[in-house]
Image (cartoon, rainbow, N blue to C red):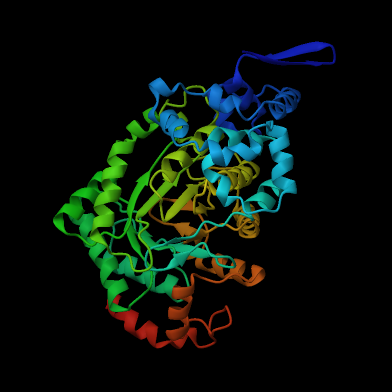
Length: 459
């Protein structure tokens, strides 16, 4: 089945739904690299016009990637809830956009009736403000040692990476972050090396800090899922199981995972029963372009592949899902404008699928972007109701060599939008004298007793 329209007396034709979706995508370096992008703004606009008339049902009837060859496609179709889909089943993509913008009801009830492809399609014909306005109405609440995603709250991942995994350097960054109110989403380390002994040492460091100072948060060392599983077998203190995921079976295979493995890891972590207010134990990270990097995109555009990764995440009820939006590089998101757009798309699609979406608002040093672009995306995602962002010393990750958001950036966003940390973590900050009880740093935060107590970590 092809899709066509007549423009100035000339017929423009798209071979199939997959091609139409790619041509309708906002300009994206990844799609250009893959040879999928529209050749002109006119072709893009025509594709968007045609896409607006496509019935939502077609995404169920014409899967972009054949389910007999891809377990992610099978998962999407098997988990689709026809009853939840019923209220919008007769709509086209364009009518669905209008419905989303006009309706003020809670969207959470329909999450299981939506597929990633439906949401990717409607996002392609939405402006940035549309993506923000709709996503803001979606609240996804999760819990482990604290409660994340509540209205009026913004959480942060404290990311104390070190190029040699030096415990003293990591501890210094943890102290810095806690004294700025960062770390309620997770204290999460990207290890420089993934060997069992090193990862276990880092897990034990984080567990000691959390337990000794009774911090209502969770830890994670972002090792491969199989490393975490082996460490759980050994009795290591694993709170959250991390894994990078993608939107096709072949791309996930390039990460060394499949759905069955993720299910096994989740069951192991749940059996440890380390949570206190909830039992969400999985932490996933994604990024537009990952399927293309693995040559596993099947001709599907980067943003739609990314949305499909959220179907994988949804299957395992994660505590956190993080779109590491600008990390893969300018080959995939060329400049600040593309990074900003992708961050809003990812947040929108993830939230409507029922996921606790956060964003690593970031760029690599060879991208055509700067910290002002990140300030813009930071503010827009705050307005859109993003669950969490990153907190990195000086916004400069010295191990991964990229630019993100700092502890100060989280304070800025909380102050200008009147947002607060997770309630259990906020109470702890007030007890420790870091916050003053009025959503801000205490005037005496630099002299808080917590500082002298934490300083023992680097003595």
